[in-house]
Length: 261
Image (cartoon, rainbow, N blue to C red; front, side, top):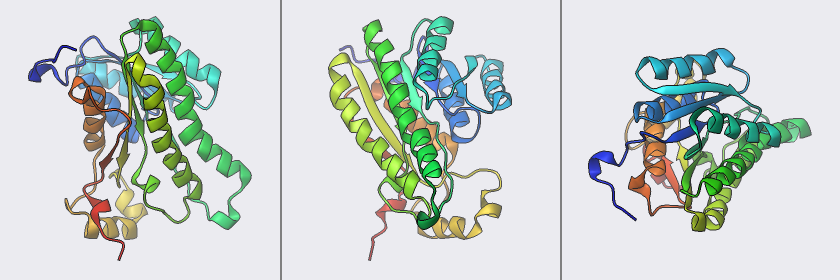
């Protein structure tokens, strides 16, 4: 394999990147960063057409290339159609970032079956369906590719009121390793990132206790930002990570270095 020069390691010119759940928040930051790196970006959204369009337009306004596409990625047909839209618009798929998900709060003893199913489908089933659809396309292209799954530190560290979410995200981490095992011979690398607490507008107002507790313990002395996670995704999808697959990269400011006792 040719080793690219350092200045080209994070250059995504000519690459097609799908980012799911990119209409707001973390996904918006990831999509914007890939656009800045020169990729043609498929900005996926489900409910927020306005958000998805705004992200795509922002990438284009900065000289990039992007389209916004709606899909319910918990449905196999929609996942396949999302990949097809990337192929129709840009000729293929090189990178998939599985970021779509949901993060509700439910006490375990009051959690309904419907709530469990929705969270597991949104956070785990969608990863499988999108990975399967994108990897089939990558295999057909014969050039390999990269998948980056967005997990969470809660896949390693339990959180009250999140039994469905933590279980689903722990499943994402193990799914990542298994997919890496199966797809590696096709030149497709599969990794995950596990973010810590990512700042957003209104977070400190909505959850002051949690923000204060995180800040008190995090070694790097701040909350994360979307660009912190976006750059980790950029790295794992790039030739700089060409011999990395099946890994889960913590992007948490060091919070999990704290001892349990």
